[in-house]
Length: 262
Ligand SMILES: Cc1cc2nc3c(=O)[nH]c(=O)nc-3n(C[C@H](O)[C@H](O)[C@H](O)COP(=O)(O)O)c2cc1C
Image 1 (cartoon, helix red, strand yellow):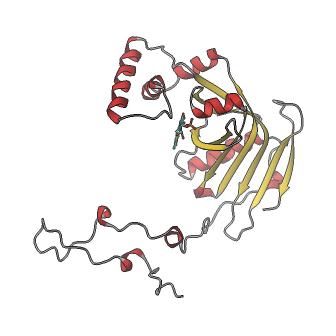
Image 2: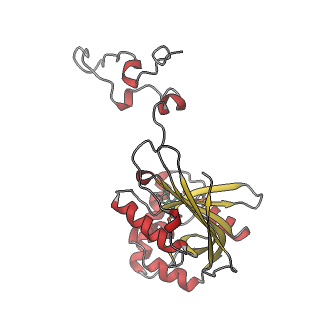
Image 3: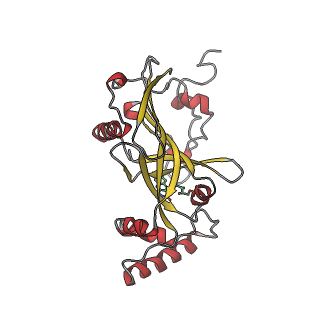
């Protein structure tokens, strides 16, 4: 069936004529604003004609890549920032719960050591992700930078840093971030937004009275990488993949490099 017959030619043509707004004059020239648009029709329809990465993308000379994954991450992150990628430090942290059920959420990457061995992030230890990491201290971290068609994936074991390290990291956070962490109870059911606003006001007063207060359970984690993969997308599907595999014990910055079939 042709796209036109299915009404796939574009959202404007498929919209029904707008209902006249009884509050305005004749209403004959009213275009529907976003609040009047019909529900999106279907996912395939919305994505029709929008293949991912159909644009010029940078090249990646994997055979000339550094011996360790760390310098390449700094290089790619700097390129992402220069290319205008928004929030390039936002990555997906995947964990598994006690039943082996996977879970994933976006967090902020804090640091990566020079060799690309230790990848740091912070989180509430009493949140679902914190409990999952306590039960099963292994995780995957992934990030996609669309403007560059680049993905980075990291897998490894996770270690929680000492409380002193977490307290020092907490002090570097913005007041708003500290207030949010002091509120706590992350991912618990909440009865109303008013209840939350009240808790924020309490946390704000606490931080004003005790500027060096640290949220209970604030934790810094290091993912000790076992594998780090760099993936450069290509509009013609000649994607280039390079995987670093740690060859020594945990934490040792010794890596082998392997090209992977896309
Ligand atoms: C861009 C972005 C950044 C985020 N940064 C953090 C963060 O640094 N720490 C955090 O706990 N949650 C952060 N979140 C919220 C998490 O994705 C998640 O909703 C929350 O941590 C609860 O996850 P959990 O229930 O699996 O523990 C961020 C979300 C987004 C979209």
